[in-house]
Picture 1 (spheres, helix red, strand yellow):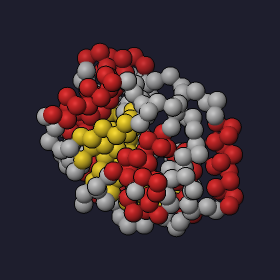
Picture 2 (cartoon, rainbow, N blue to C red):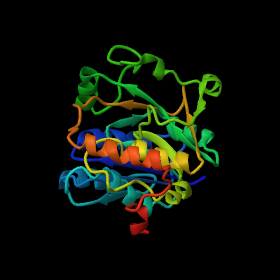
Picture 3 (cartoon, rainbow, N blue to C red):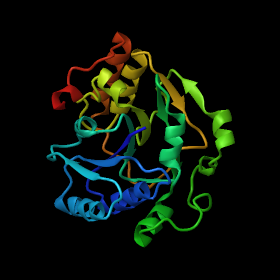
Picture 4 (cartoon, rainbow, N blue to C red):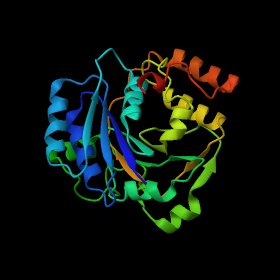
Length: 261
């Protein structure tokens, strides 16, 4: 199965560098890595080019002009460029456990999309990791806010992973789906500008289309670096857009990925 791994980023090259190295250190590598860049400064591009020169798989920089928080647009452009039949989304402040891609592959199944497991790192541990530019020590000790999520076990994953028809807890910093299914709902809705709810609305359309959500536990682990809360000034508008999709049971958005295909 050909996998495209898409990383979103914006002006945090230190975290992105760690994230990219963790992607390239997988026991099962994706066929390509696409950095969906929402208008970062040139120094981010320099980091990507330096890593891409020696990478074992293509590392592609998908950049768009900085016109504010346009995550949906950035992701749609990356999805349009993706060559893989299966897509895994992560954020640029995410560090992958080395079995991450392998675990997602194990749970990939037609008719399903996947929510993986996130481990939260506190401010102190995140700063230490960024300063040392490496993941040192145990992630299941001091500085981890939800230690149970650190445990990786295939047996526990088989027992406790579950299906869901709800949107609660959706986090596209660790999310996977078939590219064909994303195109079938026209990708992310670009009416969403500013932080919030674009992932829930995308999930709602996948569910309305008849797909099933699978929450993978104790597998597909990522470590989330601490960062301040994002600006939420657009949240009220975005909540209204989400509500419309849910109430009208929409499977398609008008302003989506099709404009880049």
